[in-house]
Length: 80
Image 1 (cartoon, rainbow, N blue to C red):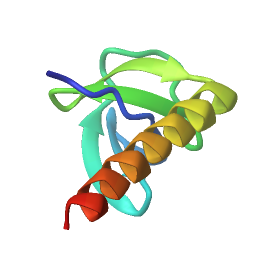
Image 2: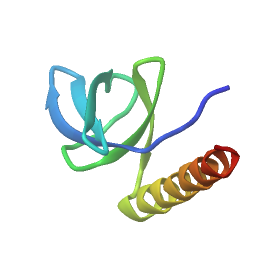
Image 3: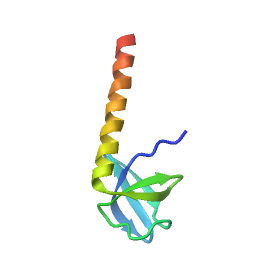
Image 4: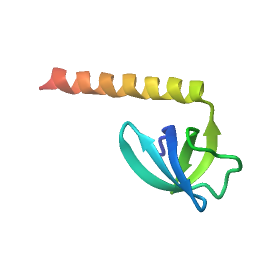
């Protein structure tokens, strides 16, 4: 299963970008998308950015993912 996590582009050089999610940085190819700029949010699969998101959609997705993670953490805490 794949989980699409919006990632913020913080640097681009030669179609390769540094992307960031909550301080975790990785490299991703931008060769499949046009007009990606620093500050944009993208969805990455297998090392390639495959979709660009607007900031509002990215923020909502990240909020929901954080809520889901907090819920799972609370379930784990209740077991312990």
